[in-house]
Length: 122
Image (cartoon, rainbow, N blue to C red):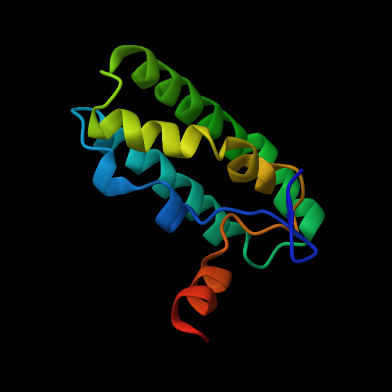
């Protein structure tokens, strides 16, 4: 696991998924799948960490598995320098960090707060 400033490296789906790069006939489906993950997180907001982890394992993991299959398919089918392939590879290269939220109910789905403070200086 990568560590940065004493913490686990955690991506921000809002930025790391590079939606502007994922322009494809099926991209709306995959971006819709990412929205489903955030909907699950909204439902889990008031849960304990163990309850949130159980919900993620039951509902989020199958969605994440489907997203990975879609990414792998796009990687096989897209031209090496296409914008879609660039976006797909961007997320595939950060996959371990992306799925980290499935391992622990206390880990947020993204690091949007950290990204905000890094980008705008808090």
